[in-house]
Image 1 (tube, one colour):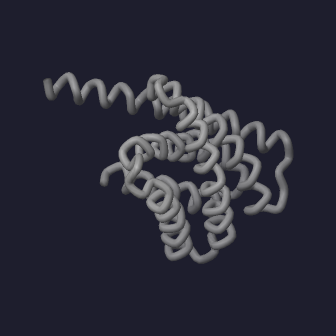
Image 2 (tube, one colour; image 1 turned 45 degrees about the horizontal axis):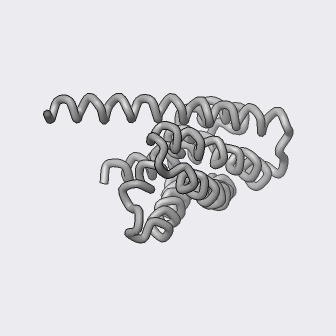
Image 3 (cartoon, one colour; image 1 turned 90 degrees about the horizontal axis):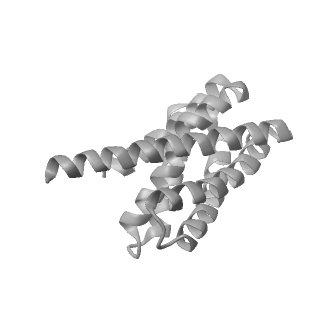
Length: 167
């Protein structure tokens, strides 16, 4: 349940931050929030495998869009762009995550984040702002991938620490 709450809060925070701060803030938002969101998607993938993974993930994405809109109706176009972009990015991310089965969680998470971040970086700015300059797409992609690597490393370390304390 903790991952679900953090996942939704992260997407809502990203949507509202983009709506309030505009495209100029997107690299920081991408690093801190979207990198985390892509990485949490992979944790949820493992937790929900075979237990309605797709309906649950889509439900979380839509819930985050609805909450974003309810908290700030002006963020409507951002919320819609987020739902579409993150749905497509999640599908791409999940496909790569699945193809990397048998590898360590860090390799699967970072490999799938690269694809998910690419899809999100191409779709989101076009839908939200009507444009996607190559420099914006590249900046978003780098920020999301590096952010995802940061969060994946942090999650692995925290999980390791918790396991060692439980032993």
